[in-house]
Amino acid sequence: MTNKLKYFIGNWKMFGDFSSFKIIQEVNKYISKSKNLGKKKIVLCVPNTLIHFYKKKLRSKLISLGAQNCHFHEGYGAFTGSVSATMLKRLGAEYIILGHSENRLEGETNQIIKKKIISSLNQKLKVIFCIGETFNEKKNGKTYSILRNQIKSSLQNKFNKNKIILAYEPVWSIGTNKIPKMNELENIIKFIKKDFKLFFKTSNAPKVLYGGSVNPKNIKSLSSISEIDGFLIGGASQSSKKFIDIIENYYK
Ligand code: PEP
Image 1 (cartoon, rainbow, N blue to C red):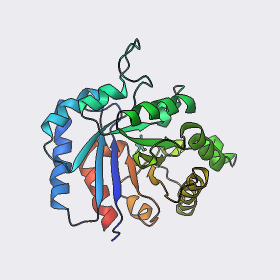
Image 2: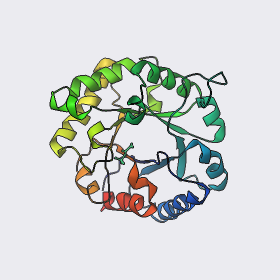
Image 3: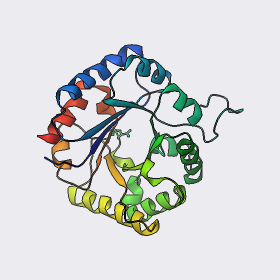
């Protein structure tokens, strides 16, 4: 079993209500019982409507709550329907997913993501920064250049990079039950870490998660890639059983 810290981060997407707190309770029960498994950090990124309610109910420190997006403007402003990093922090969020492909598909650019990262870091939120290529980009051999461009366009050397976790999420893998070939994935994760170090002239490799159709069955093969620092889990995190089985099977 690995001694390295591993992240298991759930992205509930547009799912859940007050009664879904039972999922978090189940996960919490499991985590308290399985402390002897490897070092792990559990984060659940839930809809904004639930963060404060869950935060008040969740007495445990074993699970952190996160948000899934924010407006780039900090504080308050004339942005109807939007929520700022400032507001999310006050609700009790500790983490925030930014740059998710579902938001990029709706027009979010690398420049907008950069502004969101700045306001989230200012608000002391830990950023889960998603990058990934589409199926066409992969087919045309552009995976590496897309990833490099996404990183270079949204991150700056002056950012506190200890507060940024990268999540490699190939767009073609999200919600499709398709995952990359293990050797390709290993090379991509290594590339992200190496390129990041070169670009930011640092000897510290960033934490890099994998996300895209992670489930209790495929987690075993994914666990063979030691460079992966954890997982961003979408659909499967909406079920306590699947989420727990992913963690359990990872350490088997
Ligand atoms: C995600 O939305 O970040 C994700 C990885 O989704 P899924 O696990 O459902 O593919």
